[in-house]
Length: 112
Image (cartoon, rainbow, N blue to C red; front, side):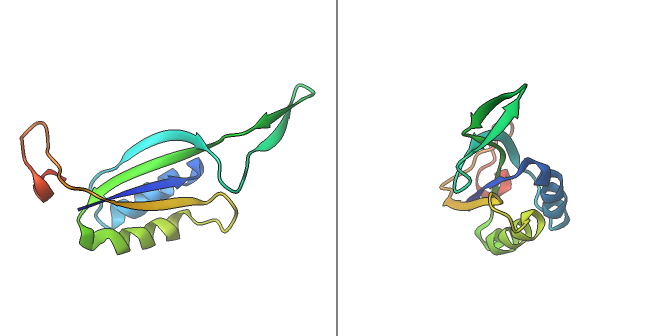
């Protein structure tokens, strides 16, 4: 099993959710996060004063799935979230040792 963590622009979340639903991804966890990479933040003017915005609002999507699904899911993520501009995000793939559904006690792929 693998866990995919995706950091994307917030306005791309609905498009990503719909695309993943179309390929059969059952569930995901969403978190609102802030961070920066090459964007390094930016300055904004509010009521005549200039402010430095160091952290950019992003959305973190976490998905646990079978290892065989990873390539298809990554391709779907890229095609549904890419704008071609800096700050499109990152995809991380991590190993998952075990999963247990609390309600039923199911373990392994049945618990996903």
